[in-house]
Structures are given as C-alpha cells and as structure tokens.
Length: 159
Ligand code: SME
Image (cartoon, rainbow, N blue to C red; front, side, top):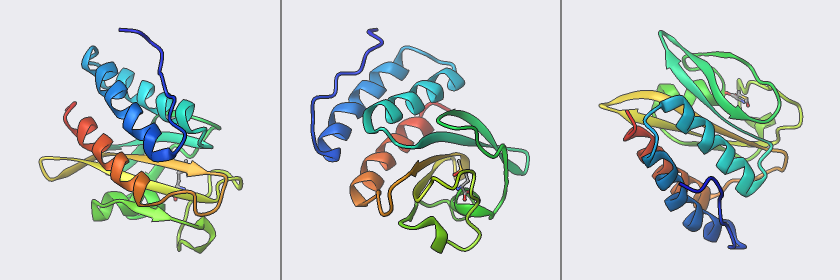
C-alpha cells in the first residue's frame, strides 16, 4: 500500500470522490481500529485543510477523545451535551453553520466557527462520532454530509 494520497480535484465534491476510494483502500489493509481512525483523520485534514478533525468514541456512558488532527481538544463529552453528544443521542448528522448559535456548543477552541458531526452506527448503537471543525462560518453543506455519511458507513463496517 502506498502511503500517499493523490487528490487533484478542485471542488470539495471532486476531492471527496477521489478521497473515499483511497481511504477504503487504506483501511482494507489494516485491522486495527485506532490505526485506521488515525489515518482517516489525517487524510481528511490533509485533503481539506480543516481546522480540527477527530473522533470521539463511546466508552461506558460518555464520549472519549480518540485519534484526531489539530489543536488539543476536550477529552470527555457527556451524552446529549454539545454537538457531539447530541449527534450521539439522536444518532444523526448535525451541521452547525455558526457554533455560537448552537445551544450548549462545547468550545474547545475559539477559532472554531462551524462544525459537522456524524455518528457511526453499528447494530443500532452509536460507536463513535466524527467531528470536523472549520475556522470559517458555514463551511459545511449537504455535499459534506453526503460524502462523510458514506465514510461513516465504511467506518461502521470496521467493527
Ligand atoms: N464542539 C464540540 C466539542 C468537540 S471540539 O469541537 C473538538 C461539541 O460541541 O460537541
């Protein structure tokens, strides 16, 4: 396996189209979940330059910080709290165009302006969430939700 990404597309959609098969190939050769999540976080940040990309894993009754790329972040998030805890509770994708307008948003960094969080659901249970933060307002659209949802299905298949 070549440990390089080849992304030539210019639009975000083109980049996702190129990135997702490469992530699938990357994780196909490795069975360790932590290793795969670490590379997925790196691949997303490397491709799109997002401010923060990472995973929070469901452990006992809270979310615990997992592999990520970016500045240091909050380590534990309670069920139903913040964007991540809400995505876990509702088992659904949440797009936040302006974090200051999301009630209960947990600010790990004041540089984060918008955010998308998606759950990986296995057998009806949320196993983890992917959290991506941008330093730009309204940085996430249906395009991100669509392709990242495909990524979450791939991640769910790793369990
Ligand atoms: N903003 C998130 C917390 C995690 S950090 O953004 C990395 C939330 O409200 O759940």
